[in-house]
Image 1: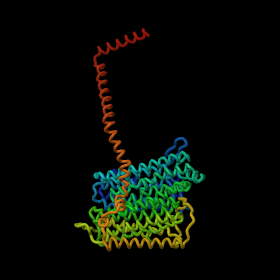
Image 2: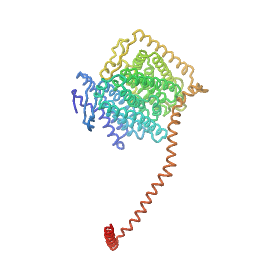
Image 3: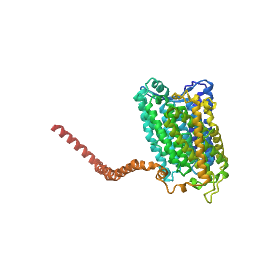
Image 4: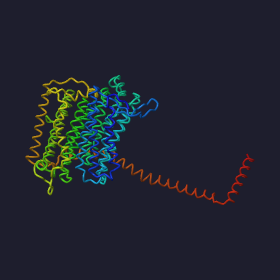
Length: 633
């Protein structure tokens, strides 16, 4: 263990504590009471958050931008020398604080939400393991340690999405997430192999220092970044590997919050931001990222317009917001992407936990057409959900305004078409989020026999804390236009190398903001008039449904297309080989070999009857045959 900064060697405790929580709750799940498992798991993540905050101050007081903590020499084969090391810099610290801070609130919330579940102890063990894996991912000092965490979150997502495994549909959703992530992981593995082949190292510092000497557009760099991009597309749910994320709603609501807000889906964003030096040298890859991000942001937002499951609406909003992060990455504005990761963690965790509070109050009901009138019966949930809705819609001064405006301004600097499409996606987001808000909390209660009530404090206190972050989190990076110094962007400069672009004038940027605010205001008023004044329910305006409406309602039939292109052909081949090859050829062949071996054994067994006279006769006969054989030859 190498200590470059005083006290920095405590960094290993950050991932180790959730791992310890996993071991305690996992091995003692039969002995621990439900609230004990929740307290232990939550305490471990809270302690990790406190240590992460301490590491921030340690690094700042030492005047360092980064420090590496080598735990032990891991792989040493020939010229391959890969240590198991942790990198503590401004980017990893940002992600550590998000994962442990928001993750701790989700853990605490889960104590109330999961208290009646029989397998709650296993749930907390898996949540701690999930947190450990994500921390290892963002703290690794090389691509191989990052990949261990990468695979860990994939495994934990499978376990948590299929947590209620008695439901076959939930098992299918878990398998779907696992398989689609494996597709991306294959690309990631190939990227790491090509990295080592090119640079003879997978350690960030060594790879980036060598890459900086290469020319932009070098074929090797382009190929490496494309392979790594495949991994990011799978993990961060971009087209074409995005369909697993909406289905991940099969897991408990706190799992949805953890996957969508603080952990798994941000892994791809983090990996590309970490590899910013490589991607700056691959303009072709950056353009592909912009196209993928735009297509994902728009498609997911459009699909969200017709969703009636409260969690599915939020799921497609996550896919759409990840698209905006990809747009920022493609523009070379890596710090803007990470800033949106930060604010998105605040308001998306709040939205999912707020949805969980609603589902908890409605006895498990998730259809927004059966809700309504919850504003008065659940005031804390309502006001916190409203704050998150304003934040994701980009209304100032809520957090989403600052991060989304930064991405839009970068898009305007790059290309007016990209900007217009991105603004269109933002307007659609605003509409379906206020559609959700109005249908759930306004009007009259539509589910007969329901008795909604406010959630307990263990659930509402995390909502309140996240609402404060959703309101004020954007002030981490106030632009110069509004009198700020872009502190967050400056903070990340030592860790990510954002591309320098020609900035638009302050007057032009102010005009863009005013125009966006006017358009957003009109969208909110239109949604209010539709769903509050006229009280139109989705079922009413969906029938008769237009061709495009039917297309959107059925999510562009993408799942059906994938089933026709991949699932059914592979299923057919599987059935064919099982029935025609395994049952007809392989099984009989194995039976013949087995029975033949048995018969041969029975035959040979006769040569060992246990009769000494026979043994003496056989020995003499063998000697005579041997002598005859020698004489003949």
